[in-house]
Structures are given as C-alpha cells and as structure tokens.
Image (cartoon, rainbow, N blue to C red):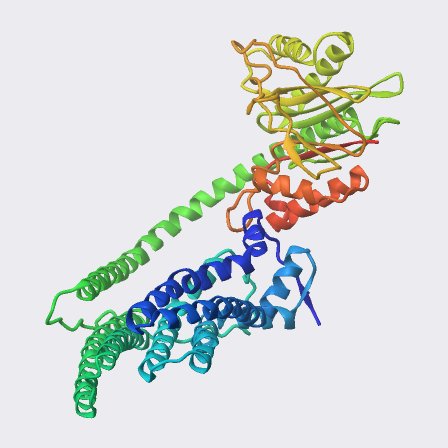
Length: 598
C-alpha cells in the first residue's frame, strides 16, 4: 500500500488543529445558542405552561439540554472519525495510507449531507429528552404535548435546512487550503443541481412558516376550548392549498431560470466545438442571464471575425513566405560565416570563464575551520561557472574568530574577480583590527572597497560575524536576515537589536554611501544555531511562480533535526529543492552556512 504526505502551511496547520472545536462551534452553536433559546421562548409563549408546569419543566430542561450536548458531540465524533484520524497524522507529519486518505476525503465531501440528515434526527431525539419526561411526569393537556412535538419538528426542519449550507461553506473553506489537494478519483462530490436546491429552499421556508402558524393557531384554539373537527378540516384544506401554491410558483420560476442557464451552457458548448455560426435565441424578458447570453454572443462574433482574418492572413502569408524564402537563403550563407566567427569567440570566452572559475575555486575555503566550540556546515552551489557569492571562515590561534558571507551584484568574470578582491580586503581588515567593533570594521572594509572598485557598477551585500567565547558580534550590509534557533524552545527569529525591526546597513563599495554600520552583540547557548544565507533561495520560484518566502525558510529551520549542523543544513536544502521541484529553477547562486554551538 502506497503512502502520501502533504506539506502544510502554518495557517493550514492551525486550522486543522482547531477543526474539531471550530466545526462544533460554527454548526452546533447555531442550535444551542440561538435556536434552543428561541424554542424556550416558544414553549413559554405557545404551550401556555401553568406556574406548576413551568416549575416542573425547569427541572427537566437543564438535564435534557446537557444530554443533548453530549449526544451531539458523540454523534459528531463518530461522523468525523476518518477525517480526524487523517488530520492527526498530518499534524504529526506521519505518512498516510491511500485507503485512509480516500476514506477521509470521501467522508469530508459528504459532510454537508450527512450532517444535515443527522441534524434532523438529533433534534427529534434531543427534544424527546425534555418532551417525554414532561409527558410522563407532569400533569398536562394534550394540546401542550402536541405543540411541544410540533416545535421539535419545526427545529428539525430548520436544522436540516441550515446545517447543509453552513457545513458546506466551512468545509469548502478548508478544502481551498489544499488539505485534500491530491486527486485520487475516490472523491465523488455530491450532485445537487440548482433546481433541486432552489426547490428545497422554497419547501423548507414554506413548511417552517406553515408549521409555526399552525402551532400558534392550535395552541390558541385549544387553550380557549374552541377547536372543532370542522375548524381543523377547513384549516388543513387552506394549508394544503397554500403549500401547493407556495411551492408551485417558486418551482415554475426556478425551472424557467434553469432552462435559460442550460441554454447558455449549450450555447457555450457549441462554441467550444468550433461552431461559430450558431445563432443565439432571443429573450422575452431582459435580466442578468440575458446579459450573459448577449456577452457570449458578442464574444462568439469577435472570434468568428478573428478566424476569418486569420484565414485571409494565411493566404497572404503563403506568398510572403515564398518571397522571404529566397531572402533567407541569401542571409543563411552570411549567417554561416558569422557563426564560425562567433564560435571561435565563444570558445575563447568559455576558456576565460573556466580559468576564472578555477582561480575562484582555489581561492575560496574548502575545508571547515577546526573549532572545539562550534559545529559548522556550509553549501556553495554556483548558478554558473563563476559565482558572485563568496564566504570565509577566519581562525585565530586554532579557534573560530569570524565568518563572512557576501554576494556581489551581477554575474560573469567581473563579479568573480570582485569576489577575490573583496575576500582579501575583508579578511585583512578583520585581522588587523581585533579590538574594533564589527560595525566599524565593516565601515573600514567599505571605504577600501570604494577605493579599489572605483566607478564599476558592481556592489556588495553581506554579513560579518566575530566569535568571542559565547558572545557574537554581527554587522549587516544590505543583506537578508540571519536567523537564530533556540534548542530549548525551538523558537526561530531574525537576529536584530532589541526593539528594532531592521538592522541592515547600506551596500558595500558604492560611492556617497560611506556611512557607519551598526554592531549587534548577542550570546549563543549550547545547542542553539545560526543560519546564514545569500538570496539564491528567496529569489527562486516553483512551477506555479511562487517564491520560497521567509516564512517557509523559518518553518524549515524550526522543523530541522536537532543533530549536527550538516543534518540541519541538508534538511533545509531538501525542503528548498522539494519546493522548487527542479534544481535548475534556482535563480541564483545557493550559499548557506549553519553554525551550531557545542
């Protein structure tokens, strides 16, 4: 049996975790906090309880009310059992068997109908918890019991009519979150055409209104002892006529509307088959459906004209193609000569790129620094042969002293050469000023880069960290956030100054931006980790053109294993490549570093 696992967003995970209570609050809240209080008012106003009866009834209904709530929750738990089991596995990141997935999805798709049918039965049963004891243990008149059962019937009809759309709306909202995104063929959505829906709404509305009027009439005549068989016979005749006419008229109107909608659908199908000569039927009465029909007809006429224009164009193109073919033959000879020249130049350019890539590869650190205090892992995957990303691990007296991660704008040999220059400037300046704040060092690096780069359009972004025991100094030059994960709480947050939201300084190597950089100092506890990235992840998209956002990076960091730095980094890379689908979709160099305090 195969298994499947879906990746959930934070919002979807919260909705699934609250599903049981939210489902009951939205659907059953209507009953127990609106309809039941209304029913209590109905009992007080229509059943005409005497003070003695009211006192007895007041002892019955709280117990019945509690029993009804327990019955409803048990009923819903049984109804939702396969769905809740599926949601539990999703929250625990457990694989789900196809049979369990199909069973949960089938039940979820039938939830509106099953919940509505259950509502009818639950109202009758729940009301019986109060009506039966009242009938057995309280002195009463027959019409009082009849009216109580009539009230139960009204509530059952009302519950059946309202639970279906309420459950449908809530279930559709969850479905839109992608909780059942995998298509298996097991799902069979309920089929209710508009005529059925409109007719049922009319029937429910009429039955509720008639039942309420009859209940009021019955309680009134019986309480005054003026009821008679003839009176009830006349009443039932008029009620029957009213029901027939109240249902017949909406049914005719609904049938007319649906016939016109069906006509529009048939019209669209003919257009879809390529029949652009079909004529549109007129409408006796102008309404929204007629306007839709006219808009579709105008669209069809425009398509017909466009097809005619294309056919005319095709004829003229044939002659133009013949004329152009002769010209292309002459041009092809010239292109062949030019292509030979370009291939020669391209070969030289490729050789230059290979040489630049080789120099850059030798220059960048390939071995991790030895550190008894930190576990370090990194990944460096250039998009092209020459990368604009570079990194450096600086050791002093056998201990990790600093880490730099930078990104040069642009691509190609120019950016690659600047990485070599910048790395040399950064390491030399870092070692030369061990007592200066890291923000001050970043400023010194900026001024030297401005002098070295000159008027080139390239600039740098990056982060620089200095490690002293368990204390870390941090400066940022217009780069993305670095993230701190606490091993104790699994909390993931960007590193920033207390109370601030942004700590990034300006670009490096740009004239007229010679300003000071901020220094952020923080402590790192054993087991905690730092995560550093260039922007290769955040600018990459999947096949649906969705970016790998910061929220997803934080989720991946939070879910990464609490093992080695390499395990955490590999988990994040797997999450990133799983999101974009194809590694070729990475839009830029991918460089990332994970530092874990031992």
